[in-house]
Amino acid sequence: MDFLDHISDAAFETIGLIAGLMGCLVIAIQLVKEVKVKEPSSMSIGFVSGWFFIYFFWALYGIRFDAIALIITNCIAMALQLSLWVIVVRKNRAIRYRTSSHAQLQS
Image (tube, rainbow, N blue to C red; front, side):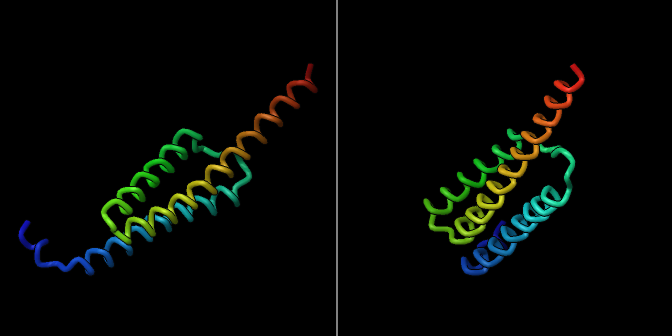
């Protein structure tokens, strides 16, 4: 892949930053959907937590190798994923509460 050697480090950082921000946009879209939809979340806590840790380790990788694009975009992704985690947990708790209250009323 000799053609990659001809691309400057600054160009790679810029492309990486754009790609990372596009990934953050995808998380933000899911976050907005979870806020707007009042139905139970279809996402599990394990799924959301797993992605948080993936972003965390990519941010550490960026810090280790001084890759600004990785640091910035993965820190943003971690914040978005943590927000998503809070929403999913709250929705799941609300559903469990309503289900247990409904079961008690029928008893």
